Each structure stands twice: as C-alpha cells, then as structure tokens.
Image (tube, rainbow, N blue to C red; front, side):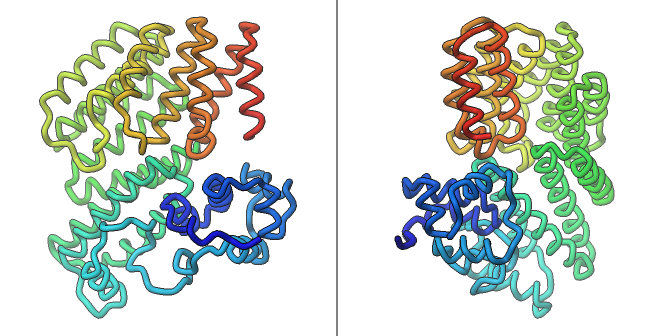
Length: 406
C-alpha cells in the first residue's frame, strides 16, 4: 500500500499538517481517501486501537518515532512541517492569495533584519491575522492556535524596530493577536489562559488608544462569564464594555446583546429582551464594524436571541430563532454551525420533539466531533441526557453515536 499524494492539495489536511494536529490529520486523511483505521495503521505502522486513540485524543503523539511514521507513511509534504523546505515569513496555514510574493520577500527581509519595518509589512500582517480568524471558523481553534501563537511571538519581536506611529500599530496588532488567542483558549475551555490573554489584550489596547479592542476584550470576558454560568458578572462586564471610550457602534451592539444574554441566564426575561432589542437597533445603523466582527449580521443576532430563549425555556422561540440563524451561516462556519445546531437540538428536546432533536443532533455531530469540542460536543451530550430522561428511544441512538466518537 502506497500513500496517496493527491490528497495533500486539500486545505484542511494541509492545515492539520502545518499545525501538527495529528488527530485531525489522521481523521481528515481517512475521510478523503475512504480508508479504515486498519488500513491507515498499516501505512504508518500502528495498530488500529492506537490509531483510534490518537484520533479521539486519548493518546498524544509525543515521540519522534511515531511522528516520523505518520509523516513517512502518509507522504506528508516536507514544506508543510516545521523545519521543512522554504522559509515562511510568519508561521501560517496555507492561505492562497493572502500574502503575495513581494509581501513574502519583504516580511522575510524584515525578519532577518535586512529591511526596516514599514507600514506595508504591518498591512500584510493585518491581512494574515484576518485570514486566520476566518480559517478558524472552518478548521477549528486546535489547528489554528499554535500557528497564531507563533505569529504573535514573531510580531512581538518586531516591537523594538518600530518608531513613532509604527510602534502604536505594532501594539494595536499585539492587542488583536492577544484577543484572538484568548478567544481560542476560551473555545478550548481553558479559562485561566483565556483570562491572561484577555488582560494582555486590554492593556495593549489602552496603551495604543484602541478603544474598540478594549471594549471587545471586555465583552468577550463577559462571554466567558456567561459560559461559566455567571449571569450577573456577564451583565456587569458587558455594560462596562458598552460604555468604553472610543467604542464603535458595532462593538457596542455586541456588548449590549451580551448583557441581554446575561440577563436571560439570570432568568430576567424583561431585561433580556429589552437589551437584545436595543442591540439589534444599534447594529441596524452601524457602518463601522471592526474587521474581527466580520460575522455580525441579522443571522448572528437571530441565533443570539435563540440562546436567550433557550435559557428562559422558551423552546418554540429558541427553535424559531436558531433556525433563522443557522440558515444564514455559510458552510465554512463549521464551529458555529456545530454549536448552534447542538443548541437547536436542545430546543427540540426541551419541547418534546424527539425525532427533530435527534435528526438535528446527528446533523451537527460530524462538525461537533471535529471542530466543536468541547462546547458543542458537551451540548450534544446534554441533549442525549434530556432525551434519555424522557425515555425517548432517540436518546439511546444519540448516546451511541456520541460514544462511537468519544
């Protein structure tokens, strides 16, 4: 059996190799080639149970020997690996058309010290960060976070080269990197690391006069409080974000809707819906959304209202709003589709629509398993528990489907 070199044109597989995300790499390679775990194991010299353990993150690839078996057995192109052929100006996913050849040469020159840091170089770094934000929607934070952390370190090393306005731009860029790293740590349920990055982002945002990023960071700390079930803290942080000096209307709308979700979590429906209505009025007239809020729009607000309905056990309202939100999300938004799809399954389970709940949960399952752990994955387990408590046979079906991938 020989490795199939053609599969390495696929962006998800290349991204997993670049990040050395071995579980995603093995699963994606099998999906693209239609291979079993036994056939893959034969190629890389591992038994099927070992392949399964790596794919499901019960075993980590820590030894050089196993890494070499995977690389050699599957024919991973060397340029995708750390230390591979060619020099990249910044560690990155394979993102065509984001960094031109001229930009690459300029960034390599800056990195080596032969060229001075300039505005064009920072423009390219901005574009690269924006592209990785969007890529994370599709391939997930596990794949993107190590690369973005390495990019952050490269950008931080340029600070001493910057003078005048360029120094402020570097600090602003560091604030944006720290906010993105905080979000990805939060996505992986690592609250202490997330809070550390949020604090760094907030400090750098204030230092560089970046009110929009300071407000975003505070609003996302409110989201972290919401994730941890603390509605009151969520409201306080969100209100602080909304009143930050220099905040744009779009960012203020994000903070106000976050306050609404906090009120819903605290079972205060009047305040929850008042805040959500206010946020929707603000965003309708906002034309100044910063680049990291590219996902803002009516679909996103519908999904947020569905989340509030879910907290308030308004099952029918939650289902209606989540359906509208999901219909507006592009297929590339895999993590969001997994999360809100899992929440829609929850709404159906709450209203006793067990068949619809199971069908929705199973539709969300592949993305939840691949890029939706732990949040969407945990929500699907909650749905299975709700169905089992209702003694619905669909609960056992969902439980077994989850167990097969746990």
